[in-house]
Length: 351
Image (cartoon, rainbow, N blue to C red; front, side, top):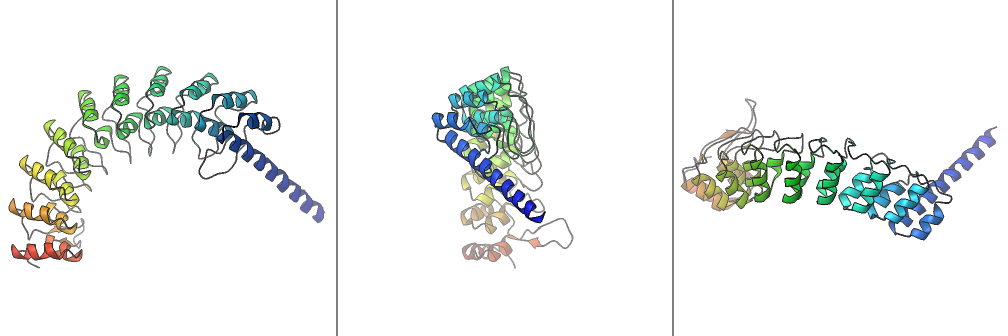
């Protein structure tokens, strides 16, 4: 009986290995756009198989969506491939094709019943994928098929956030014109305004009612983010649109703190000229002078001092009573910025 169990186990292992190999052959043939081999393999291989791989779609239909070969797609469906079949951790074929911009394959999938409204945690929606890929025609197609422009997924954002990150004004406008909310925030993904890096996109969002001073916890405000990205044209556009140069955000500081930390003297000068408070501080984010000193930006340190920054101001590193009190001199010393240490001492900084 024991020998029978061993033999049965070996046969089962060999059978499983052959199935996996056959699936691998099919997936590789699809990857190589080898229509003849795909046609031949489908005589014996189940099109709804899974070939485990860390870097490719793990199913024949997923790989076909990636390469966008409509002829292969038709062969798979003729062999009874399921349009929604996917391996755990894979996006759907529709999502993959949408991001890659394979419009013909997308239309084939929809004709076979692919759901344009499907939402998968950790992956997103077909509309998010299309927007992320910058594929205008596919975004438009999904909207006409009833896809919700405000349906988001934590970790993947919304279609509008995806389009904003991609920096595509044309798709941003299309989504906004179809009801996308310019102020919809998602945990871990910010909001359209906070994530924008493009002045043209910013104007589109504001024209649809976006709040130039909105705050997203963990991502800050649009102006803080723009200063942190050293995006001077966007900083200017935000301020001109009414952004508060002194608005703070827990964990993200103020626009001036961000600019000082990044060592962007142009933005530092501009923000101060527009009324940013030189010594404004936030627990855990210190103040502009401390941040500039900590990160070794001597020119910014000198400019802040010239504008009245208190060289001896201390700010706690946290909210507890025993949190460290930090100063510009202390942080410059800690980080080994000797020229800043020398300069701060020369203007009265004390240990």
